[in-house]
Image (cartoon, rainbow, N blue to C red; front, side, top):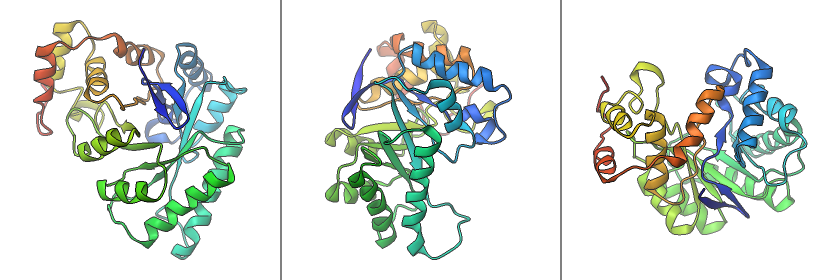
Length: 286
């Protein structure tokens, strides 16, 4: 079992994203709260020591608290905050909004400090006064002891370099998977600086028949040849792609949880790596 630093902790490279526990698109609440709590407990029992969440994922933080509190000493909980697009008021209120988001996470999870909080960005890639002000709000929360580390989500390469010139960044969450490697420069920058890179949607997006990863013919054929599932192949490719990758695949299913964690034990041979490395974003599945 390989590990990588996330701030002052070393965590297992296979973690768990809690978003799907609250239903599709983190809305509506879990159909079976007891089953959702069971998935969380099973993840921790299986050795997961890194859980990704957010207060704006509906009831997810409450589920985590009810299932796992008091938390194991080695459990690293990472959340995120964002300036919501529908928020009223001038931009000068964004820092207060981000701080309120951090406090909401602390209260709902019943913790005095979060291991890290990611600043979720809109994806415009701009380095401007607004970006600096939002980043400063998280740095202030870290200096106050509310969070142990500052992370960034949906960040451009330029924004990452600008941020790291002024403060320590412990993790980055960006879209990255077999069929979309647009964040490769960000991943490589993180690797060179010893920053954890946490790909969101590691099994592709959208879900269902249009999924560019799990429905990709190369992934399906490789999985069949190796006696693995397509998800296991896709996750193991990410683990082998760079040593600073930390996985947070999300699921509300016990079976999928077991399948995802077992990806650590899948071996991709040279043929598999060659075939998977050749996948392009427009390759459709069968």
